[in-house]
Image (tube, rainbow, N blue to C red; front, side, top):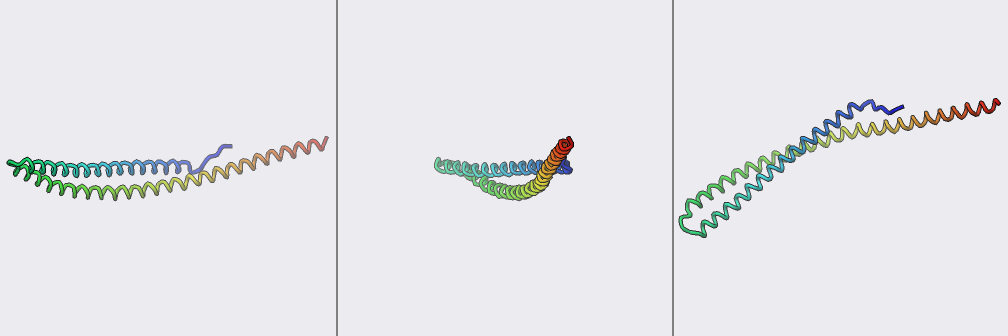
Length: 149
């Protein structure tokens, strides 16, 4: 007699849903990290532009157009950074939502998994009872036959 879980197909289905949710979560997390890296690169570009502006100021000469260009770049970069921060916030929200979905899918799977574990334990106990009953029956039969001799 072998254990057969009646809800095995549901268990597999819920595991698949959990794996899909996990995949979506990790993709969103990777996108979030990528967007944060883009922001970091933008901030690094600002630092480099300020260093160039300082270098142009210390070199003297006709640095006016170069300084104007750096100033325009910095203003534009500030706008791009603000937009990037908005993208990052959207990514954070998406990651949070997908994390909650993943948590729920994991709970759903765990519920069925726990049910499977309980049913398997019940099956094992019932199987042991049946085996013990068979052994008892054999002992009774053997005892009866020995009495009849």
